[in-house]
Image 1 (cartoon, rainbow, N blue to C red):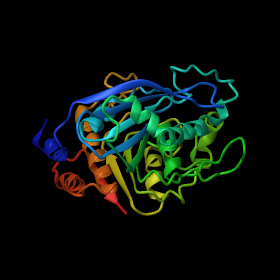
Image 2 (spheres, rainbow, N blue to C red; image 1 turned 180 degrees about the horizontal axis):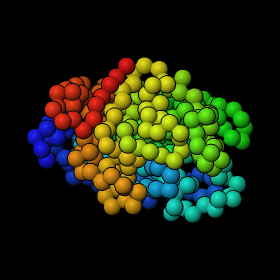
Image 3 (spheres, rainbow, N blue to C red; image 1 turned 180 degrees about the vertical axis):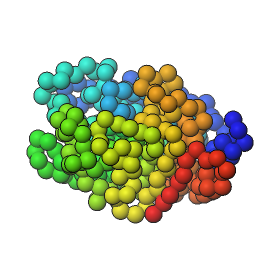
Image 4 (cartoon, rainbow, N blue to C red; image 1 turned 60 degrees about the vertical axis):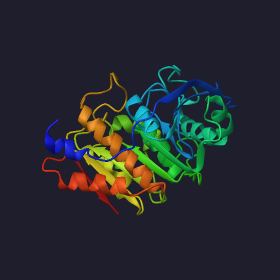
Length: 315
């Protein structure tokens, strides 16, 4: 890559470790209609490992997002990925009675993982006793960003109950929201308002947990009339202790984070994915209180690059 691009991703990361990945681990889930399938990826070495619970985008599954999950696991995190009910691998009919509350089942999936960490830890050979449960982050892409956001304090107007309940979880200490929906109401297209009712009334005012928001400046979703700036709302409309990584030229798949050969990727760019890998890793180490040097270096590298792939701002 050009020298300027190399500098933009020049964040000192720990040496990658071999990883072990186990799937599917099935958690009992009364009231869900079927068990919750989970994948866990972890480095084979190291102790006091922080955790990332990752929520996939609409239609994906525990098999997606390898570029992120593999990188995070190889660099010291335990990554836990559920398959939500909207996954193509589940095949839920549109007229299924659970459909209007898919968003709520997703949040329950994430909380169920946190409730069952003992079982999940025991299911991975060699992982027992190596978790740091005081350092847990929630992350997600697209619909998964909203799901993770609920654990961080984002409130969603439930289309069934008409209430905006607090579903935040004190076990979650930091978040990463990738290409996540913004304000509802008049900002939505008719398609989004009709088909995705959980987007109608999000409230970011209570999302107080430290969070990195990642948005592409070419992300033209058919969900909002406002264009790419809509995806920065989770940063601008939430209280402080937030950072925003704006990626230049990035569309909704942000260069290919959804998978190594994901059909959703329209803007394949390995350098952009490498930047996201390193910046999210550095941010989470900062926000979880592990070390600050990498995050400081990431911000410096982007601000000083002569041809940066993005910019970071914080509040």
